[in-house]
Image (cartoon, rainbow, N blue to C red; front, side, top):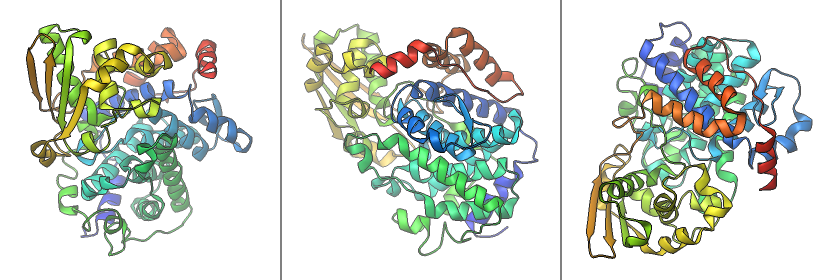
Length: 458
């Protein structure tokens, strides 16, 4: 062993090529894969992935990796870029809470593309996913929470997940995986301003991470070397992107004993995760008391840092803005009964009932809750009703977090809900069964013509 975190993580990643796969770890990896496809397929219908697929079709080149947006096969990086972008677009992708990071989209997209390209098996894919999650989530822990002041972790840390997963799937040993990590460190990027303004850039962050990480791994497999002190050096990744040189002792604690993929958050709402605790509280208070949207006089959400700094958007108007607005999502929850795909369709973004509730919702920073972030994602919600009643709920966690997880049935229901309108119920059930129990890789799917027509019309 060594005190170099990069080498420690590379050794661990390489071990997933041959170590026995614990049944629990395999099960959680399959849950992550199912959840990723649930987020991917609806994202295949809309920009920016549809725009990228069209713009890049002429330069696709040969290969067996499937681009799910247009159903065509091509090289690893092409599929990884577009699939990772699509899987982040509808905001239903997974979260590693302690790192403030969505590992699925930048990690699974290149892992699947690489294993498809090499004609591998489901076991190869699951091993690559587990290794990519483990390394990237631990790097995320080392640089948080200060990294999240300016950087988008999914675009930055996701590059390591992509590099490790791709390298393992390519058959790299520990030394080459280390070089892939070293090169990935200098490729990683993604700034938060991209989603503080109205733009399509945010889904491109995991797309770029998947592409850049895959490039780092492909290079390493061919003998391209990276800096072995790229993570912890005085001008390395941690020093450059966080307020210290990295909490490596914390990040590496329990390595080989506990695995990040077994502690994932799966989203129960189709919006920014920093709003979830507030939405859960509002939903539960409404269920307990039966108040109607028109009964609301005022709602106040007290939250941790990003709930206020990123998600206090009282004037949200675009789809991207609305996905990051406490005001919009709270009003949509009360009006529609949930914050799912339908909440962000044009007719609901402009729904007068939702718009009437939004000015009644306010957000503040709670110092106590801020101290618990990122390990604890809580909210305090106060609701004043027109009849004079005052309701309050301290929501200590979020539905879908490791301490309040979605059951396997709920993961399956989420998959069906999000994918059936895209590929049809029969195809969705076949894919779901294969993802839970199959030994073969997931293959191409046929997107329904009416889904494409609807997306084009929008």
